[in-house]
Amino acid sequence: MTTATTASSDPNEEEVEWEMRPGGMLVQKRSGNSQVIAPPNLRVRVVYGAARYQISANSQSTFGELKKLLAAETGLEPGEQRLIFRGKERENGEYLDTCGVKDRAKVVLIEDPESKERRLIEMRRNAKIQAIHRLIDDVSTEVDRLAEQVCIIEKSIGNGNKVAEVQITTLMEMLMRQAVKLDSIPAEEGDACVAKKDSEGKRVQKCVETLDVLKESNGRKERAEEAVVVTAKWETFDQSSSAVLTQWELFD
Image (cartoon, rainbow, N blue to C red; front, side, top):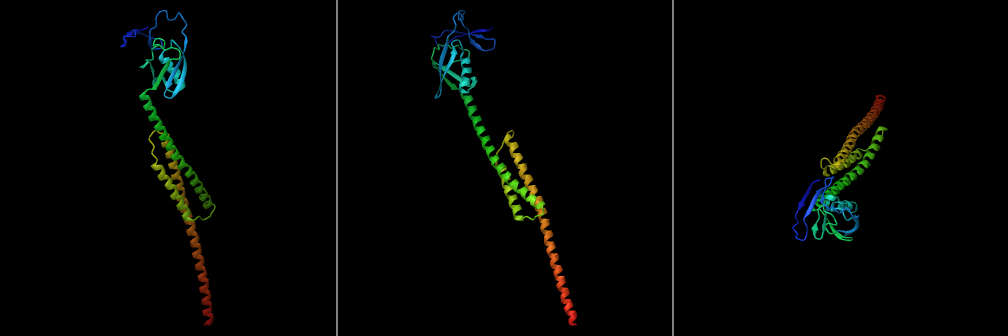
């Protein structure tokens, strides 16, 4: 077991001897008769901003062990905690009773500034990702509605019915507007948003390609119907011409 001695800057405090526990934690070395009397439990009052906690801890516990108990109450990991007692930040290896912590003593907990900054950055990042997901979900809902209309048109043309061309072109324009919305949504590489955004983009592209095919098929059907009408007109004209010739023959 390794031991070391640290001189205190406060003349009223004794020199502190440290020892290395088997788990690797550096703690204050205790006197030889410290194990004779069973250590009492303390009710430590912890102040964390506007919150108040009362933690039951062994008087011979360290401040590091107190942080572990506080982690379950506050949600702060031990490494994110700073414990202040009697105006001084306490190290993880210092014992409660050695530092003068009595029953119902007050300890102030503050969050490590760097940890707090990292937490705020993470919260802002998560809020941004959630906003992007909502935008993509809005586009997805609209694409679902438009895709249903594409299926209806495809079924109608497949059954031999003619669909107004303006209906197809309008649907294509509405799909392209959704594609523009997707392009305007920011997403960073590695985010789940990227895969979701690409998936919706492929859906829009597939619907537009389907409408292109349907538009061509619908156009051929329309041209074929026009050709039939023209042929019928010519047949009518030929019959009328034959009747006139017959009348002229009778006149002769």
